[in-house]
Length: 122
Image (cartoon, rainbow, N blue to C red; front, side, top):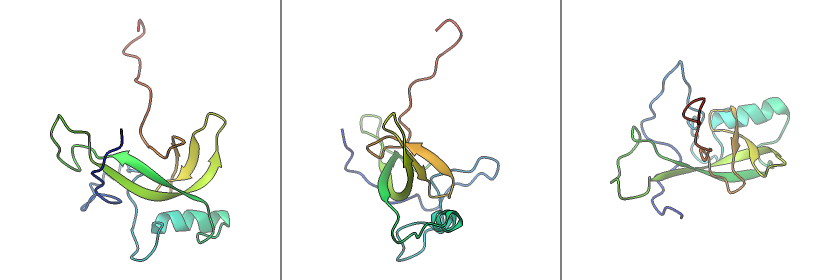
């Protein structure tokens, strides 16, 4: 099910915790598709940001970033990310808005992970 409530690229203001950086926050430069950190990572790798392949990544908002009723799906953020490589399992290695590497699903959704085991006996 797709969510029509897209909030933009990232919340304003961003909630930054220095000891636990959020890979989905970056410095947005007016008129540019990629964040300053993504462009710096591409330049460091010797890739021209103007010609790199990108994917539109979607992630759900957290309760700290937005409010929504429990009966509604979470609002989402969408942002372009450069593709580094494609994996055998279908997922994609990208450069997140913070300039850090990340892995997203083939459809560009970030954050869909299997539920963790509750304990040793699970």
